[in-house]
Amino acid sequence: MSPPDPSARHLVVGGVPVPAFLYGTAWKEEATERLTGLALQAGFRGIDTANQRRHYHEAGVGAALQQAFAAGLVRREDLFVQTKFTSAPGQDHRLPYDPRADPATQVRQSFASSLEHLGVERLDSYVLHGPSRRFGLTAFDLAVWQAMEALHAAGATRFLGVSNVGLDQLEELCARAATPPAFVQNRCFAQTGWDREVRAFCRERAIVYQGFSLLTANVGELRQPAFQRLVARVGRTPAQVVFRFALQVGMQPLTGTTDPRHMREDLESHAFELDPADVRLMEGIAGG
Ligand SMILES: NC(=O)c1ccc[n+]([C@@H]2O[C@H](COP(=O)([O-])OP(=O)(O)OC[C@H]3O[C@@H](n4cnc5c(N)ncnc54)[C@H](OP(=O)(O)O)[C@@H]3O)[C@@H](O)[C@H]2O)c1
Image (cartoon, rainbow, N blue to C red; front, top):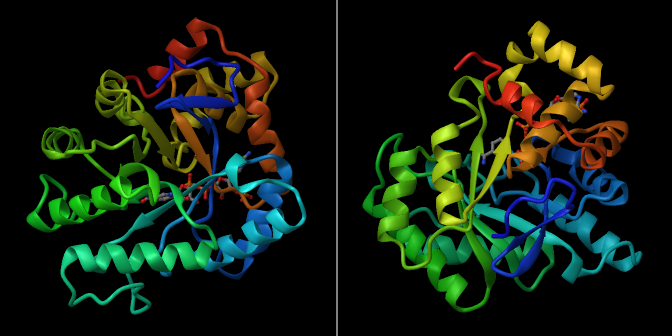
């Protein structure tokens, strides 16, 4: 990973340009296709989804991608497509694999179903949606990771990632994996210094930290007078200040906005810069 360049719309991961800002497709149900299409029109070139029908409609994402390709809006090679393997406890009855199969078969079936939903031949990033337990990794998690490594080795996905991990789990995964994650995707709370410890580990290992719920997990902090003053001083929206901060500290933020105006606003967080003192203020906004 290259050092973060605050004005860049791309990060460079393993020599490959990756969009600095991702559009997330959770919780959109029948509006998924339309909203993903609008996000592509607004300029997003990184799309995050999951083969987890309970929260995502991956086939709707695929329909939007196909439409964008057909319309000449974007070429496959200019798009970063990321999806996830979700284990059975995270799924409802609409499983994309046989839950009685061994972990490697589950991963292969889920991956094949993702390619079919998305209408692509390979993925840019394939993410383990989360370890089975809150602490540590289970034999199942490690078997899933090995199956993901096999997909990576076969060239079916450019990168691997892991989501919803604590520092101990990430350290263990990096120690045991043949192919370490290129991405970590976590809910990012200002209360924990915006996941300070995990981000520091990611920085050391050249792992890109993807932050989600940057707005919704931090509603109290974003009401604080210090934040409100900062927003007023820089003349941007609260969301833009949060996303700008995220970009500037090297995070790859996600937004799942359903509002085309917010989509454009969010991408405009590339267009200004926070002073180092304001970045420090944001780092400690929760008082931690
Ligand atoms: N790995 C995981 O387990 C996991 C879990 C959760 C999410 N994710 C990923 O992260 C993505 C984003 O999810 P999220 O939790 O960050 O929440 P989100 O879906 O982005 O929700 C943001 C909320 O803030 C509101 N908002 C107001 N102004 C906004 C602005 N300018 N820009 C953006 N939002 C604004 C949105 O309303 P409007 O719609 O009206 O703008 C929306 O209600 C998901 O779609 C998914 O891809 C991953």
